[in-house]
Length: 391
Image (cartoon, helix red, strand yellow):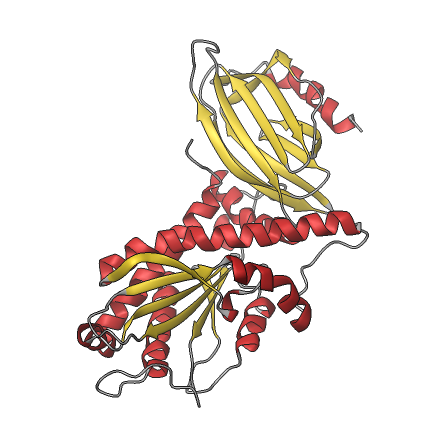
């Protein structure tokens, strides 16, 4: 079990002869169950990149480091929890895993009165194998960029020659066909406004080249709610955005609103998923108990990421036009019920309000909303890719 762990001893003789800038004097892995903490202590701040790796059935968290060496007297107790072994190489440290985890935060902690060393603290939390493997596919490019364009084991391959892994965005224009949605005072129909806004958002996202984009409808067709969610899951959506326009009896009410799933909706996720076959991928041979844990983790992560995106989105929408009070709200909308796809429903404005209706009837007004949503999407995925958090 500890063969790979003890491989670090073999690297010491070769590594200590080099004059690296930062010396690591402790590698510690603690924890059990869902949560694990890795701590690297050194005599200076560690320049690092953290990546999920999946190779021939072995999953690892790689901490790539620049300008470092391992002190020959470093404290290296055996690892715990999900980390079964680890290897130190000139590239950094690879922590091999017994089950899939992701980085929930990574902190650089400077010297304190009680500990004069610099510490890199990495917290890991259990996730589904499918989520890990998707992260690993994205991290192939990120790791290559960190190492100056080189892919591990393929020094001649440059970043430019890699096939980029793109996040999948599914845009859902509400209503359509026989369902016109809300009507403006000038008879403008919600289904038309939201389709034009969705097409504008698609164009804004395509301009960046970062994403694969799908629309649940691109013409005046009605799509059943369950089919919209099924499409998103079949396309492997990383984010689902349903676009609508609101209506109110009080015509003074104006502004955009962002909805995520409420507690009543959370209680509907399992029965609806079972009804429509939205089964979560779990590795063969996984016990029912572990499968249940992984399923719960996936649903919890989906709920959290939906809320994170909503909070990123609101200030961007506010820069494009008015927003309502308490602009992040929760509701029991069917299109938000996917257990494994972060999702929001956006009401881009009120067609019953004269100013909102005029804004949404104009190409410029719709484009401002679309670009605001696109900026939020960029910020959301930039945050996810960074694998860091602030304490």
